[in-house]
Image (cartoon, rainbow, N blue to C red; front, side, top):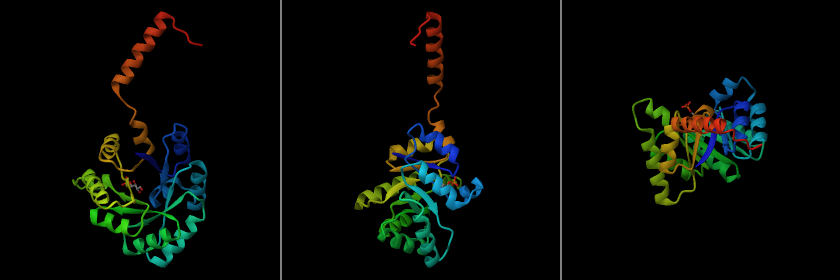
Length: 217
Ligand code: E4P
């Protein structure tokens, strides 16, 4: 499973990038607003920092303007992936941009039918939002599983990008289901390493090494 980092925070991306955990980055207008940076500037910096796809989201609502925004974003760098909402205007824009060779991430997916439409429109990635479904006492992970089954039934090449991930457990479940990608905030990715027995075991090894005077360098 590829890891995308769901943030526009350059320092956080750089820190994780040094560990080899960053296969790409996703942003959205809320994350760009949180960064306090100009969208074109910060997106360019992220694209320069990471090798994989960097999703940058349009803010227009109608197709013509969305397409113009998408084309403008695509000029930022070769690894830009234009993010469009799951509306008819978004799907039309997805088809047009995909036909031009631009990667497209169709976002705000909450149903199997929406994922089917996105695949047929040529989406590179479909982003089902797990956490926002869980917030409504629905089952976000069940949606990932159902889209996996449906895409596999027909051999769609659109990659399932599990989004709106809130916990390390979400990462585990997405990986077990076979999501192609999971995008998560830096803190969630960092939290995946935690295990009390690792900490306890290491404390024991280090204490014994000190007692025995073990030195390597
Ligand atoms: C990523 O592409 C999405 O925009 C993001 O994961 C949404 O997460 P949220 O539901 O925590 O805002």
